Image 1 (cartoon, rainbow, N blue to C red):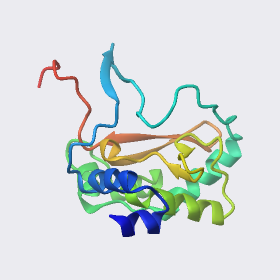
Image 2: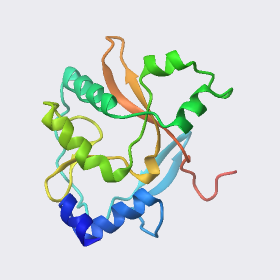
Image 3: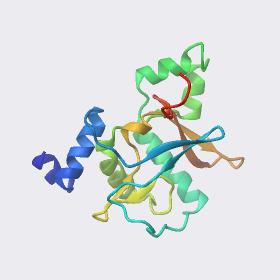
Image 4: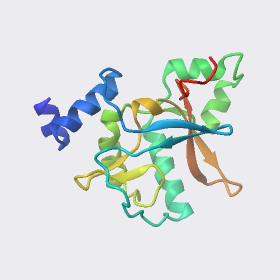
Length: 180
């Protein structure tokens, strides 16, 4: 635990949470409570270590967002299980469509800081790009967690630029009262 914390420049408690999240074990509670609002699922609450009122970065330009997401997608792969799901009868996509739309698997949480460092080293802007944030140590990272594991789907505008990302979750987030 101490070695992981030292290597990734984090506290041992954050290291524990990251390892539990990556291994999908433990009883760590992120502080978020899913609530249903119509067909949408929202999250109530905030992580305990993040104080209210954190200033937000101005949104990056459309070109910067596109460049960052494009380089990110080039760094990621699609797991065989996700490819199989996309090509299944339920989704019905061909291998060509999967490549064309650049579907990728969400990376494990323990790689988030390294991925972000690589993006910055390649000249990408992360400040103001949705999904990227500074942790409590001031290091840039991307918000991928165990809860958000699944297939990363680029959202492309009419101009052909990637505007954002959606995630087809491996395990949908449900309220305890939701029907099975």
